[in-house]
Amino acid sequence: MAVSLRVRVLGVVFSGLVLAGCQTTAETSGEGGGAVQMARDAMARGDVYSTASARRTTAIPPRIYLIRGLANVFSQGMDDLGAKLRARGYNATVHEHGAWSTIAAEIVANQRATGGRHQAVVIGHSLGANAVTDIANAVAQQGGTLALAVAFDPTVRQPLAGGAKRYINLFQSNNGWGTSVAAVPGYRGRLENIDLRQEANLTHFNIDKDAGLHNRVIGWIGQAVGSPRGNGRQAAAR
Image 1 (cartoon, rainbow, N blue to C red):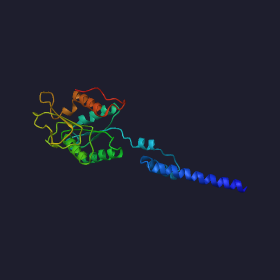
Image 2: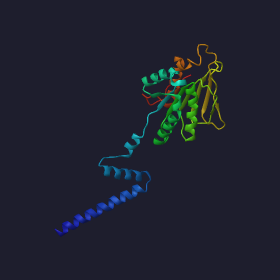
Image 3: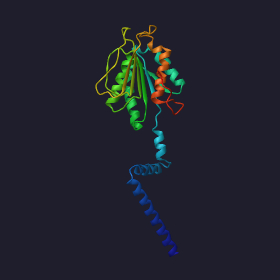
Image 4: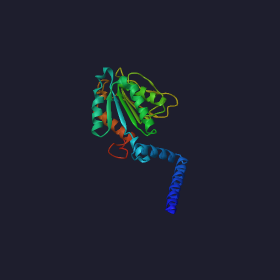
C-alpha cells in the first residue's frame, strides 16, 4: 500500500509539472497567453471557449447607412434605395441627418471591435449628403475609414479631410442647390465629383429617387464591400 501511495503522489506531481510547463510555454508565446487566460476564464464560468469562436463573435457584417435631408420627410429616395439594398441581403438602415455624429461613433466602435475589419458605407441626400462628409471627417479623426461614401447633391461645399476610401458626389451644378466636394491636401482616398447638369429630368428634389443612379450606387457598394450573398466583388459599375 505504501508503494501504491507513492506512485499516486508521483503521478500527481508529474501532472502538475507538465501543466505548469504548458502554461509557461503558452504565456510566453504572445497569443497563446491570451488563449490560456481565456481557457481559465471559461473554466471559471464552467463552459468551453476557444480563440476561433472569440474571433467569430467579433465579426460584424458590412453596414450601410442612408441619410435623409431636411426635416426627415424629404429624400424618400433614401428609403427606396435602402429597401433595394435590404432585398439584396445588405444590412441597410435609414436615418435623419442630425444623427450623423451617432453614426460616426458607431462606425468607429465597430471597427475597433473588429480590429479595423468592419466595413461601412454612408449615403445621403441634400442635408444628408452634407452629413456624409461630416461622418467621413469624424471617422478619420478617430483613425477609422469608410469603404464607400456617396453624396446626392450636397448643399454646402465642405472640405473632405479623409475617412473614405472612395467618395462619389452625384450633383448638379446648375440646379441652384448642388455643389461639388473638395478634398484637402493630403487626402489619400479617391474623390469623384460627377456633375449631372446635362440630365434635364433631374432636379435637387428627385435626384435621390432616380432608378438609374440607384443601380449605379448598388454596383459601387458591391465593389466596395462585396455581395452579402457571395465572397467575390461584384462587376464594375459605370
